Length: 183
Image 1 (cartoon, rainbow, N blue to C red):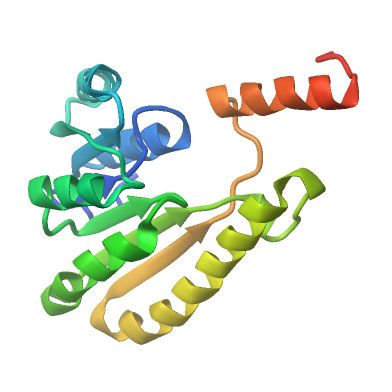
Image 2 (cartoon, rainbow, N blue to C red; image 1 turned 180 degrees about the horizontal axis):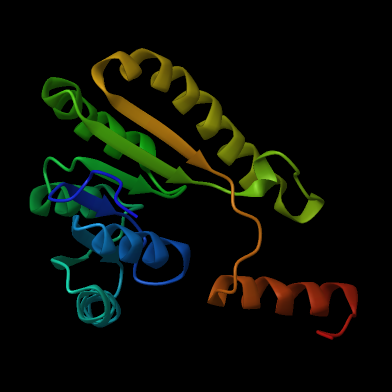
């Protein structure tokens, strides 16, 4: 698929595994210069190398905790003006505020944030997560209406279940909590 984004630069937060990694891989397949991120240097370096080998793309690793101010500053020091920002729940507003003015000035920007289907269908055991994710969704909807005229789009993804380590962890917790088996 050709999305017309070849040669653009993407900063993909929390992308050393799971859905973030899948996003980084898809972007690299499109010819985007990708900066993957994770907290553990060896894990994010391995993810970047594997994505690079799989896609033949230009993939860089940034070890930083996106939830901390120092980590955000590290991300922006290495990739100060991404064309595409893919952020999960952690600290997206700070990062968006930092990169949005340059996107508007360039008349191009793509922001993709991944929250959860819990925004639309909250569950009792995820109420705090669902509340903050729903708030983020509402804030960024308002921002999107303001920046669309500058060719900057903000896209919301509300995934359900994907076969990731996090999904396995949640299944194990549910089995323990509810006294049920995996099968």
